[in-house]
Structures are given as C-alpha cells and as structure tokens.
Image 1: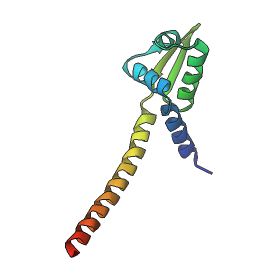
Image 2: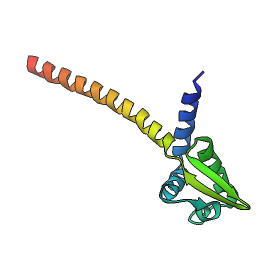
Image 3: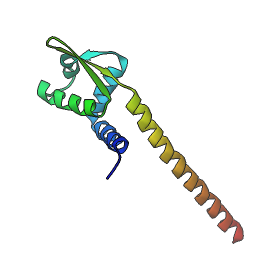
Image 4: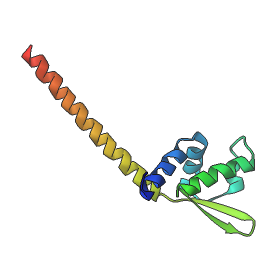
Length: 112
C-alpha cells in the first residue's frame, strides 16, 4: 500500500493522462477561467467538463473558488513541479543505465 504522497502523485499522473484535462491545464496556466469559459472550446456538456475539473481538483492541480453561482478555476503549479521532479529522477536513472550500456558495448567492440 502506497503512502499518501504516492497516492497523490498517482492522482496527478491520472489527471495528466487525459487530453481534455491537459488542454484545460494549459488554459488555466495562463489565467483564471470560469467553468463556462472552460467548457466553451470543448464539444461536451458542462457536466462532462465538471467531471474533468473534479479529477484535476482531486489531484491538486486546480483551485476552484465560488462566487455565488460562478465557479472560477485557477491552476496550482506545485503538483506539476513534483511530477516533473519524479520524471527527472527516472530520466537520470535511465540515462545512467544507457551510458553504462554504451560503455559496455564500446568495450566489447574494442576487445574484438
């Protein structure tokens, strides 16, 4: 069973796995949007957009403020920074392994 931090990271990667949610994140990275404004460019119902927003909220990527009937959405960048750190760790890990493989193949070729 994973830690709370691992579960949160799973939620972030789950949220990022969907094209619509990534497009929404790109929009709210620039400025705050209302839910209606976010729904406008997509060919789906307001209910469907709301489901995507809930996934982003659970992952901590979206902050929603409510002013009467108007829901405003803004991006929380912190989970993305943590996801980037996670990806960077694996990038360094695999680059190191590939460097080792390259060195091994080069040495093997020299022995022939």
